[in-house]
Image (cartoon, rainbow, N blue to C red):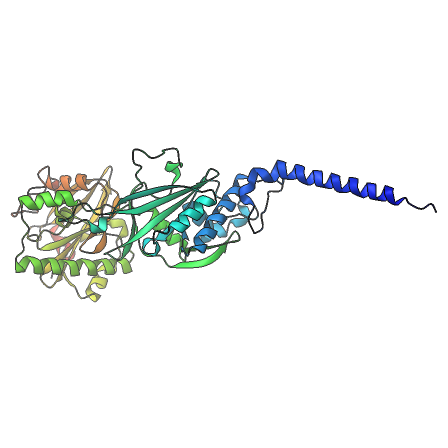
Length: 463
């Protein structure tokens, strides 16, 4: 058998090695150099075609950002509504029907933005984090605003605080929402407002989950889990968080207008007035707890709503607390729940189908609960005169509900508060009226017939 020339073997090995090296160089220039930002420790998964897709870039961008946050001890949690919806139990049951990349079923939402939230008390302005993000290629748009917790009748300015950070890398935007603790034991985030000099093309602002308006949330319990191979915190009760997010809009008290009002009409600082405000605060908190246990939403109505809107407080001469509930949220055990909470039933007028009204007593302060009925493009609540059986109705334009704060309690108010107050009190709502006839004074009152006398025992109950 002829012997193989060593020179020939060496030549073949050199040629083979050169071809392999040329192939590696070609592959590096064609595929890897275009995505040099991905050259970091850790596994990288490409699509089946071997190319990086938009989902791959989103996944890698989120992974890189969360790695930075973890390194600097920032406990962000996932607040992205699309990703959380995919994580909800309803969607998990249908997961097999969803069409996603195998390695990125939840974080790859197909949107150019991913939202996270951070408890603001855990944020210390850390230039190292922002510098590291910049070194990784992230661009930053920082949005700040005035701190409403420092606003009051005496101080209308408040210092500026960070509200939203937007980090952009290769066309994908990470939104970080700062959540601040408020005195009503809830979390709040501010509105995202661009200043004149800011780049309006920096992010797809209309697609952002947070910032269209201020929002408020109960404090969510968080759990650390693995989502698409990435360690991330999420709300333990995802469905509840998403429900809160859809109804989170918050209205700040109008301190400037309230101060102007109180300059014209100084507040009553007598001992009786101070004691009344104390009792109202206690009663309102009790009502909030009781109805929350029944999962019944309510809002400030009538004079209590006017007091919040006009003077950021309660009207000391009103002598009662007024709240509204949509009749669809009525629960038969409301009366027993308030009695168990220590209140006595003062009267019950009407029925579930028509003009229901409940009134409870705590010490010497009344809690009036008005139930609202829908009728075309308006809603109304009823009123009953006990001695005559006459019925009245108070008509309001339809409204949605927002959150607000009164007496250190997070409460709902009509979002269209001015329309609501004007309907009830007329164009002169800003002028105090101490003499008030509930049958004649409201601008929106109408006669609504009478209860048949044979039904009075059931429909007009006074205790």
